[in-house]
Length: 326
Image 1 (cartoon, rainbow, N blue to C red):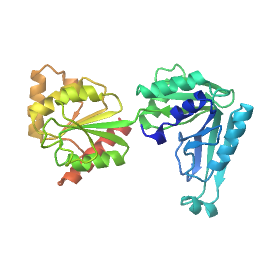
Image 2: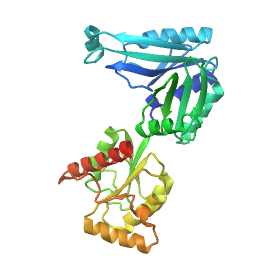
Image 3: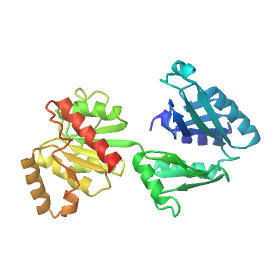
Image 4: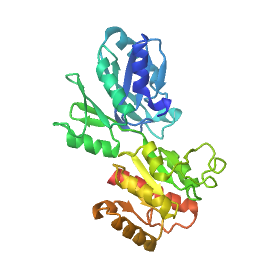
């Protein structure tokens, strides 16, 4: 988690260190908006700030309101508009409006609730921060919530915070990750594309010649056997796994580990004939048919890709399709 994404964590740290803190959250947008719903800005009692709610065009006003909120202890729902004439100056094609919720930590946003949110994020647990902006009632909730469970589950799948009536549902999903087994030529463009799409990529390859740092400068590379590396890496509902080695001795342990997890995507390189042999091996190992059916193979959308970069595009497109469309 980068510093820009650790806004609740920073707000809690500021409050606990005696600096005071307020959290500002984009709760609604109309027209052209520089930051999506759910974006957050932390403001300290010393006027320090981290994060963003508008890319700079309304931060000054939000900070001023936040400092006042730290004095009177009351939350605020603010609305800002950017005219078409002023939009270009702040990087927008046209004007728009945003609503921003400002909550002083402790006085309005309970410290215990914020601490629980931070703990859930640290444990990579998807959670929703739910606040009724009329009654100012707050809670954390998940897909099993008796009132909003189905709505929260859908919002988590689509990574989309927003209003349900008078209640704002702020989605806090764990960061996306991609575990790539096989530091081959396709992996070189794939790690770059995955990062641009918001995934934290990790390469797994026990072969020193393939997983050399010189071939993947600056990348996280695990040189353990794939099943052990994936166990150390962790597999959950925000993790995609892609196997690229073409070697059953390396791919199969990774596939078995992935199929025994909650990962949302597993794609395996190889032709239709190669996959048929893979399926036969998995069936012989006792893997149920419904689990085998989770494998996307041949990996990637069928776009006629030829080069390593084109194949990487097809893989990433299929990963995103599975993430967003289920």
